[in-house]
Structure formats: C-alpha cells, structure tokens
Amino acid sequence: MISTPSHYAYLKIAEVCDRKCSFCAIPGIRGGHVSRSSADIVKEAEGLVAGGVKEIIVISQDTTYYGLDLYKRRKIAGLLDSLAKVNPDGWIRLHYAYPHGFPLELLPVIREHQNICRYIDIPLQHINNRILRSMKRGLSSARTRKLVDTIRKEIPGIILRSSFIVGYPGETDQEYRELLEFVRETGFDRLGVFAYSHEEGTSAFKLRDDVSRKIKQERLEEIMEVQEGISLNKNLGRLGTNLKVLIDRKEGDSGCRQ
Image (cartoon, rainbow, N blue to C red; front, side, top):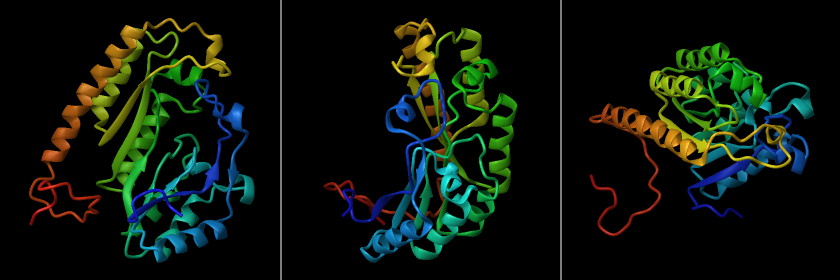
C-alpha cells in the first residue's frame, strides 16, 4: 500500500545512518545504517510499477552509503541501474545523497538512463572549513566545490538541490558571508535553509548556542531571498522549451491547458 497519490511513490532502500554529524541526533536514537537487499528493493519497485506508479523516489537517510553493510561496497549505482530497467517508461529520482564518499560511478548511470531524473538532492550544510570540521561532515570546502563541479561536468543540465544550516554555534558573520557567497556563485536549482537547533544528545550540544534566534532568522531569510532570484532566473530560462511532466492534480479552472 502507498500513502502518496497513485502516480508516484517513495522507495526506502535503507534505514538510519552511520554518519556522526554533530547536529543530528538520529543515529544515537535509532542505531546504525541498515541496507535492504537489492533483490527486495527491486521486487518492491516491480510491484509499484505494476500498480501504476510512474515516478519512484529513492530515499534513505544516506542513499550514497547504500550497500556498504551488506555488500562491503557502495551499491547505489548498480541499484539505480536495476531500478531504471524496472521502470523504463517512468522516472527514477534520487534523494539525500550524502557528499562525503559520494560514489562517482553513480554519475554515468544517471547520464546514460533517460528515465533516471537528472536531479540529485545533496545536502551540503555549509561551506566554511571550520564549521564543516565542527559539523563532522568529513569534507572540506575545496572538496565540496570540486564535487559540485564534477557532478555538473559529468551530467550537463543536472538539477541540484541542497540544504544548509545557518547559525551553527560560533558561526561568525564572515563565515556566514562565505556561505552566502557560495550559494550565490553556485546557483543551486533548489535550496532549503534551516536555522540551527540545539539538540540534546548531539555532540554540538556541548558547544555554546551563541547565535541569537533573531540573527539565525535574518541569515536564513537573506539566503532564501538570494535563492529566489536564482530560481526565478533559471525558471525564466526554460520559457519556450518542451518538458515531459507529471500532473499531480487539477484544481478548478487552474489545471493544465494546451
């Protein structure tokens, strides 16, 4: 049974996460990463397609880690290849691709299958080196930038979504400005920004939550204002193009027209 509209469904490939990000309490609450077998996932996908699902959204807390516990190596590339063959007339979409240890062999699989969306949701969280180290993200600013450049080079026209945290303990105005400029320069297609939340049970809880709620909100709103302009320009750039779409619903007279 699926709880989403009948034309799309979420396909969970693993539970929880082995990462130790300083701001996240989930691994401490729910335990470590547990992958489902490829055979089990493919079987579920076959059932979804047989039931009329057109878009399969592949999710877990960390999709790029998939397979390390079961197969001793990252298997997300092979899994997506199999899922693409199960749903040749629909779409496969990948969410929550952790940047550290990102398997580059995934990129040609996305590029070569027309039914795998040229879309990656890759949460980067910050770009300043000191904050990335404190967050325990395992990736430097330079390597983060190189990864984004590599993804765009290997898959021209790919849509990138990311998420960032502002107001992390000790975040200075200069460190925040570095993040803001990175967002402006990189031009993500979609972006989510969150104000840091001091969570008991995380390693960052030992740090002093010294950025005021007011400043956190101001930083969040400023980045999102910049992103609104980026998104608008990207959308305007699609005027006059033909795109394959899925229609969620029609509401009154505001539905799709020829």
